[in-house]
Image (tube, rainbow, N blue to C red; front, side, top):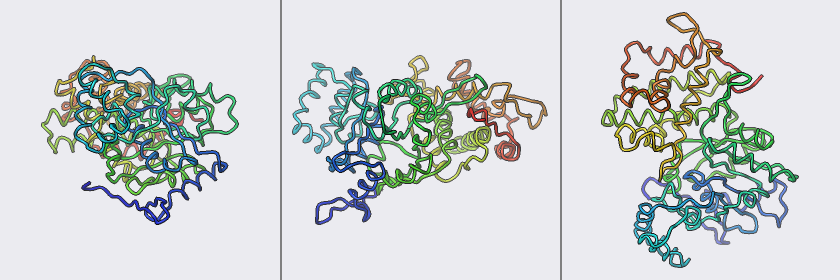
Length: 462
């Protein structure tokens, strides 16, 4: 594939190497760290089967799946989600356009059911096609077949590592259920959250709850065992071996060995201690990606308009992170790249585009067929609700009077009026950019960096 980097080789003894690193040795190193015995495999489960959760599981399956006595991975998704006729027809076209996929399904005696689904003689289900290597939110990119479990207790009860591939809006509920199955556990699992979004709570003081904190609260798993993985990642492109990178953030105890274990030739994983900034930015970038999509559609992909929007939205993101973290990591390097790729190409940007073009509407909800959950919508509501609290007031730079922080975030305010209260049309996003009273984005950044805006209470910290 053009643009892909592949450095996998087969040694004469049959073992797989990545850039000279023996995969089995890497697996053994991590198993020893967890205290696994020779006959006790490393068990990983991905909870949630959206595009990124499915691809993440598939990457691990392709890397370590051949070591069956030492490694097991499965993916959980709810049963009963039907594949509609239109998607079934498109899936059939994808299958027949790929000889390798066609042969694989014929060998597995699975091809006939896709023929019947195309004809309308059979209903396919999302968990069923996932076993054959098709994610409902990403049917154009077949992945490797996965072991799918629809019983949550069966999926998680003995897992050493749980990957949270759920939307933030479902994370707490599912992990509260998971906690019931871990009451008898002796060992403490490791949890890697891929989720991007937040909840807002107003009592006892206004604060946000990130997915890693939701998981910690729901399960009682120590926060040092709960990590966040994020980066400039488009799931389909990563599975197609486009070169990418990510950061795993959290306590040093696990982030460094996990970075080594997860790293692949085309998917480089670094480790970072700043869990707060990365996880908050993971939610914020989805918020502003929706607006980026709107601007792109309304200006016929004007590079100038998109760059103006980029300047304003990134300054708001920096402003918000300075409220939430005492010394947030700068929006640069991988953090900036993650924001850039999400604004450029992602489901939230796509959603903003489709809204502005009138091809979808808000009455369709936040879960869109073929795309999954649009997490930026709920995040708009959560961040607005949090930052509009008068108890968090800051001094307005020009009017010299206390105002809620959201008053310094005109893009966020406008998105709230478009998406949540629906009192404005998508055209309002352009008015927000063209408002002559807006300060230079640099001013917002300087204010955030030079004033004591940090509020520990916003993350429910003492």
